[in-house]
Length: 75
Image 1: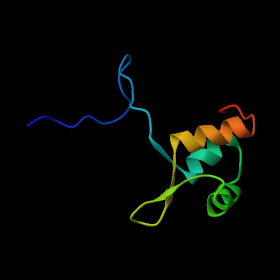
Image 2: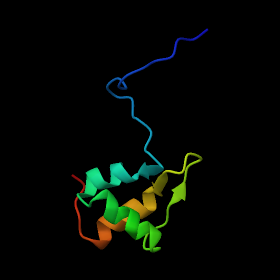
Image 3: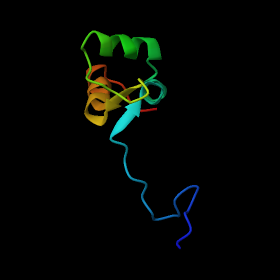
């Protein structure tokens, strides 16, 4: 039986890029408050999905749309 590896990937091993981001991920990277991001989603300005637990997830394309729309640099 193969042992599961935990922790950071070793040098040279790329971590797979996320397809979806949480509201807090987007907030942290853009500097926009979570409340504003949720309001954008509710008003239809950005597309999101809901997890089984009811949390919002924002696709990478929408995350990039926010960055480009507001001329933000990823922090």
